[in-house]
Image (cartoon, rainbow, N blue to C red; front, side, top):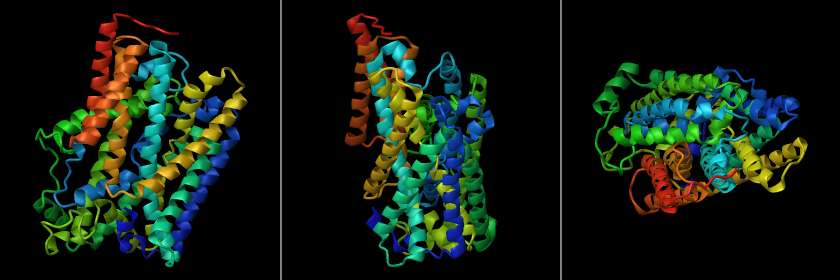
Length: 507
């Protein structure tokens, strides 16, 4: 909750140079959107950058998209917390497996015809209703998940507001930060389209990697005994444990949940989610898309290892294990939540100038806008079938209107989510898991060519019901949501097809 956020997190020691760097970066993002906006004369350019983006830029964009503010802030907190370690990497192993499956099973189909969204593949097999349902679920899920991302970034920007306006309340500082960042995100996507998003993400990748490395170097220099002492302390507290083979479906970071759940989650988010698929469609052939996806996986592994290691360094810096009652107190002591540890170090312990760079890096991780993919989905899959053929200029106007409305919706979600205290990385990933499973399931149903529209709808509604029951009625960990949602959709759809004994097809 916003009200539970320690005042130390919001009241920072930032200087004028930090302020200049931070707001200079935000201004640069807006300027980049305006610059790319000069070329946005058609929906093809606006949504697919003319299919001229090189594979390495797409790879960097995928990494930047996958590495949000949630990663930058929350993942170090996972290793920092009492009992925390590197078992989060078991999810990353699943991410790699999912990428291989996507490269073989899904990507070739994206380039077999001219499609605007991945959900158009469902229309040829199951008709308009199934496509519309999948598209609608994507829009809802993405709006909620990116609202969480926006909130996390705003908590850090609030430190800037508090540094220069101590009279403002914590709540108002965070609310103002949400609105400011949301407006910047809307503006550069509104004018620059996906081309601006991709190339800004390439720059962002370099910024936040540099910021993370700089923070790690400062941490090592501030820890008594340096790197050697931090490694020794981490080993004593079991921080470097990677594998946990316990089969407990209520635990998030165990091998089976990570490898199986992570693979299914990546198959859905990177294979059947327009947020990622739109980036593949910015290339002109499947080989480039596969190269971009697989190379991004290698970077992701190194990156998550680095962020978890920063968590160990933070543990060695703050030494919460020396506090009385550490073994039975708050897991993130002296903080109330793990997400608060890294922001506190950034705003209180980094030198002037470097603190501004790292905060700019956090903003960089937050600027992977989903607004373009939401607009392409809303216009191509929901609006166009209703109004029929209109001019390309008309669809451009509607697309920009959707970007504006979706951006406002994400701001509203961020303001509302500020009232919950759950770890943001868990919140964002669990939200993604709720609806991605049924969407993946209907794509699998199409791949095995089972049933028609009625069977697909029956499968999807069954998958949604099962996932919601797991989320609100059990203690099953979120990595399993996508597994059960997709397999239930596949099984229920197959059973419905057998019961009706029909192979309904629509054009």
